[in-house]
Structures are given as C-alpha cells and as structure tokens.
Length: 194
Image 1 (cartoon, rainbow, N blue to C red):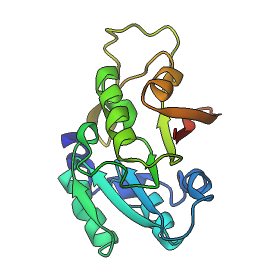
Image 2: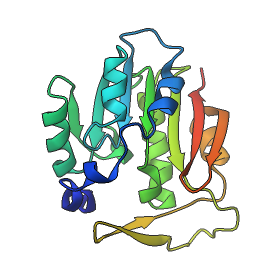
Image 3: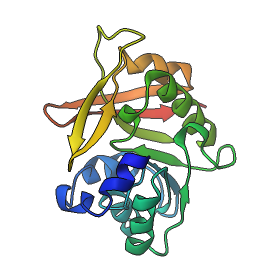
Image 4: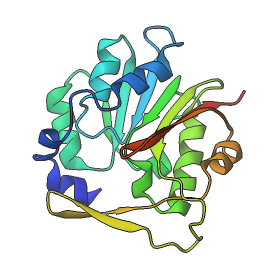
C-alpha cells in the first residue's frame, strides 16, 4: 500500500508498544508453541509480530508496503515476510494455524474485503483462529465511498460494511466474540470452520 510507504519512517513514533498485543496473544493462546501464524498487514512487525514470535509462534508477515516490510526485516530479521496482497495471499491452502489482521482490512473497499476474507480463509486450517479489526456501520450502502483521514499528512481511505457476520459466515468462519473498544476499534474473534 503506497500510503504506508510514505509514512514508514514516521509510523513507529505514532504507535504504542502494546497496541493489539493482548488481543493477538489471547487469540492464539489455545495453540501450542511453534504453531504457524499469518500476520496479514504486518507493517513493521511491532508490536504484534514481535510479541507473537517472543511467545514461541512461527509467524509469517505479509504486507503490501515495501517500506513497512523493509523495517519489518530490520526489526525481525529471522522472521519470514512477504510483499503481497491480502486479496491473494501467496501461500498454499491450509498453511497456517491462525491469522491476525490488525488495522488493515478497513483500508480495503467492501468488495476487496470480501476477497481478502476468502483468501485468508483459504490459507487457514480448520479450527484456526482469525482476529481482525474492522469498522461496522449498519446503514452504510453498497456504493459507500468510505471516509478519508490522515496520518502524518498522508491521506488514507477507510471503509465499513454493514455486518461482518455475513463475511464471517460466507467465508467459512464462525464468530467467537466481538469486542468494541470505543474510540479505538472493534475486534472480531472468529474461527475457521472444519
């Protein structure tokens, strides 16, 4: 994502050292050490990928920003990462025991979010947890243009859909829990069926 390339140097100064860590570790806690976790939209690897690696998981990061991945590779040189599009995860079917997508899906249009859901579903094993953050607005229309916001002077697009439960069910997941953190985000804990 080109916008993240533009803020890759600035981004770490704006993020806390624990954002999403508790939620990510909770999502994968039932899995044994050494399980394979896909971090979709891994950015620079901090703090989530780093925490997962330190907890004993084998993490692979995927991100569309070359600038963020360059920092990821400096921060976590022993952790594999791939420059790729979450709408077409470049991995074989059922390769991962879990997936985390923190702060990425809402940058995709609703139709692209659906494609990303299908792609993540394809690479997860049955029973795999999937934690993602997203924005849900009940009365948003199919052709909603989304909203824009800025980070460090760079414009970003954000999109919501009316109900993530539809995507969760349609793409082979079951909803485990939803946590709304007012002013921050909504966290969805899902699990890949069968």
